[in-house]
Length: 182
Image (cartoon, rainbow, N blue to C red; front, side, top):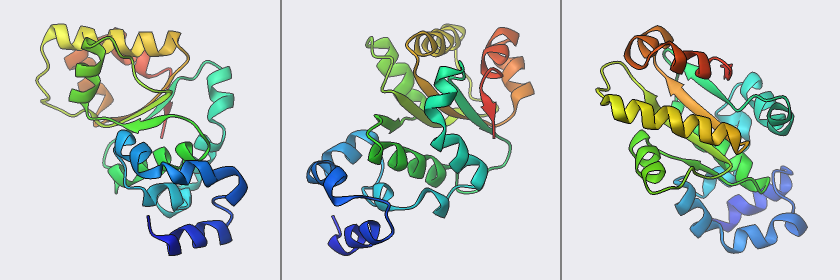
């Protein structure tokens, strides 16, 4: 971990030495599990995300209380992976278990009986022509429902909602649209 970056994070009030000291002792392991570079925990969310995204993340607990179990990006999104890693880093420094997963990670973990951490960010959740089998689509929908019932959050990328509906069905789209679109 770059000590100069840590000092800057303290100076910018991104981190507090009294609050985040223990987190920093184990930051490399935590970030490896989250699949993000450790620098993302030290980086202000606004460096990669819009004001709307920052506001959404800051109010994530309120969203959960209001029954909103995620948000999704759609269309052409600049720096999507960096945005998701920055969100994961911000959540981690607020002691929320957040991880960036690929779609294959989601399917494998769910098959193994693991619905995932508090927040899962999937930058390749749906792209046109993905070619999932019907049983995988059903498994993915089951994963979303189980996470909703466990009061967990999904932050997903959906290239095109109409194509998703065509490939995965209207029930899948209806579930997704209960999320906040960014």
